[in-house]
Image (cartoon, rainbow, N blue to C red; front, side):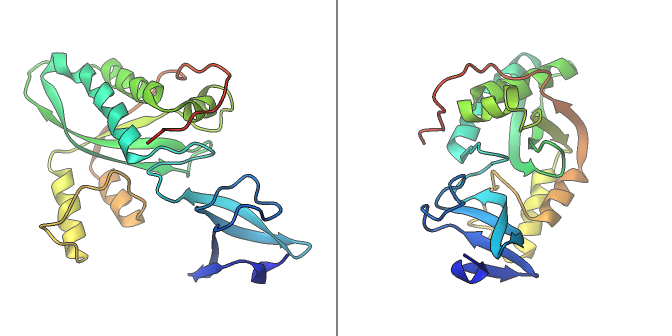
Length: 219
């Protein structure tokens, strides 16, 4: 088995593999649709590094979180903002793999109608609520395997998502068809969002998890 055995995509001198069959020896850890980076060869056999999972919004390790599950988790979390007359105007997310371990990051733009400041503990509760709303594979990665770091919420300046839309349109997106992406991976977009971060909050503890059959989102 060597590099020529696989349907590689060559991009900027990086070899990527999009798995289309699951019976290849050595690929038992991965699924059909996974995208892997070829990081080297041993005895002419390629060694892989996991990049992302097709049709999944967020993924750090064996976890996979799709848009529907993420939306539901965020909906649960924003209930903590109601007593402060605050609402979530817009949000997006990305899987930050620059940290060890990697972790989920959510960018939140708020609409503040009340005069009472929101304590940091409330945003920390939002982080934990999101984590506890996610599937058991994610929670196992956080609580048991320690392969996923604490979820982070970054509060961004008002108007940030308008800037994001302007940037997308400048790249050719249609203003009539534009929809805020629920997950971002393009480095310039992540940099734009990070440049407008006001405060950051992390989940204060691991979500609840009990050993049992792994369950991904059914959506």
